[in-house]
Length: 273
Image 1 (cartoon, helix red, strand yellow):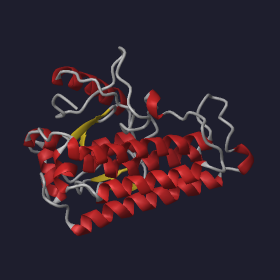
Image 2: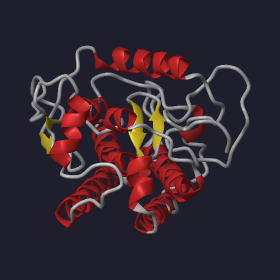
Image 3: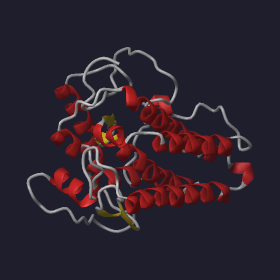
């Protein structure tokens, strides 16, 4: 892969080079923009989804130590000092920076978050009556099976992204890495379903799975992501960023944690069926 990967890549309207299905997390393409263009694109998305957001039950980013409220109550709370660099402060709260290894207790908390949110996602799926799991809502939304397929596609993409991180140049500056921290606001954007978003085409469900097969696909995507994470060097996880279409650049370690919050978002969607 050529070019700088400081901010990763962003989705473009014009034709783009195709890559293996699902290998770019939330469906980002691989054609590079200038940094200015990238920032305009993700900043515009973030601004559009930040309006009128509310949050529910208490949740904490185990990546940054930032407390956040998920959907249901008003506003958002965090513990980041109100200094001139909130992202750098978030990294300090996380207890590590750069290529340093995440403290074991924080890594355990990340894994617990992923396990908890996945268990809830599956429970909400199984709550949907069997004969309705492949039926899409009348408003044009996804069926329960399609929701699970989408979640697994995104997770498969993150697994492939982490695997490929070892071959990507780590050229992000300290400031850019700070900007790629998983902050309370980014978590809120992912978890909150009050503002609807359109998933990139590459990670939309393709109808390839049934009720009998989709949970196996989900189990496989989790196993792949965990294997990629455990096999990755800390310098890769903390030193390389990739753009998320709605919240901007994230480190690969932040992408890993974000999957738990993505599960929470779609567990809420299943509750609406």
